[in-house]
Amino acid sequence: MSDRAGPVAAAFREWTGRDPEGVWAAPGRVNLIGEHTDYNDGFVLPAAIDRLVLVAAGRRDGGRLRLWSRQAGPPADLELAAVGPGRVEGWAAYPAGVAWALGQAGVELGGADLVVDGDVPAGSGLSSSAALECATATALADLHGAGLDRPALAALARRAENEVVGVPSGAMDQMVSMLGRAGHALFLDTRSLATEQVPLPLEAAGLCLVVLDTRAGHRLVDGAYADRRAACEAAAATLGVAALRDATLAQVEQHRTALGEPGLRRARHVVTENARVLEAVALLRAGELDRLGPLLAASHASLRDDYEVSSPELDTAVAAAVEAGAVGARMTGAGFGGSAIALVPAELASQVGDRAREAFAAAGFGPPEITPVVPSDGARRLA
Ligand code: GLA
Image (cartoon, rainbow, N blue to C red; front, top):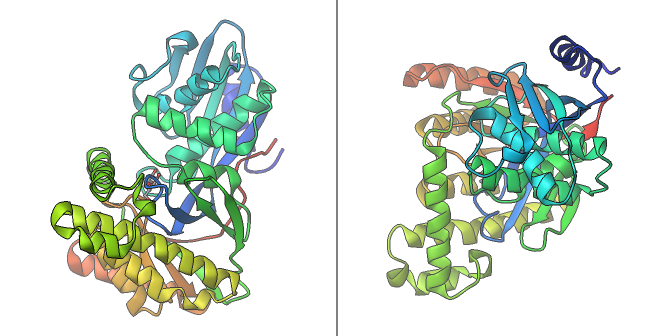
């Protein structure tokens, strides 16, 4: 058994009195660029990271789903037939939602015991929820021989998030948690769901990717996220396009009066952010990682000023990273708190951390958590 799988398998034995049939894992993610574009049929460029949610699992008869977590909250014992939208509270909604989505896809579950463990911090903008959903989906699909491929499992995991947890998120997080590849970013077209693994040879470029977790959780994330999504749909309707993916900057400018405020700025963010993703992918394909800085800076400014999803802590983290010599930095994920990422020359990584801690202390914020992350593989069986 791999070292990572040992503790969760031991917890499974302690809580269920038997051995698990296996241990599965799925990673959290950072998004390099392409924020709030995935519910506008747009482009994203995330990478899976070396932070995992692990699920030890075993089948059981009797139609019940029993859930334990080493971190997330109290155990749950649910009747599978009674699980569905609006019917499960708390952390159990994520794994139970996946079980429900598998059932909707025609997979007969019968019953299962799941024990969850992991080191993707919750509420940090690193997609701990998608990691939990994808680890659960991989475990249950494998145990039941569901024969579903990874994009299908990602779609089920997203359905759990949208319909059972109730967050109207896009396709990015579950797709990269399923399809991530070590040393690569995932270029995803969220309309066609076409993907391309784009090499991200950080070490060869002398760079590292640093997460600056502000420890100021996603405040108001649900309401504000749904609000941004609705604003984008309204702007698309005003412009007469199926989704903001189809709009140009010229169109947005031309219809500024009809779009109004803040519709104009919301639409402008999405249109310019999509263009920045395409530019970033072109730079990565050309092996020019060190030229990503201006795109990261423009993305952050657009999220701060036009989309209004940054926070004083995120702005401070980004400014500190750049002052300390980062190639570029920006908030990552939904925003409203959570984490920033910085692309940093390896020899400056500790200075970035020091500068950010100083800046947070000077601003009266609690200390940020600074950790390097490594682009890693997506969901997999560990034992
Ligand atoms: C959250 C959602 C994603 C995406 C990002 C913002 O992480 O789950 O689908 O919309 O916010 O880019």
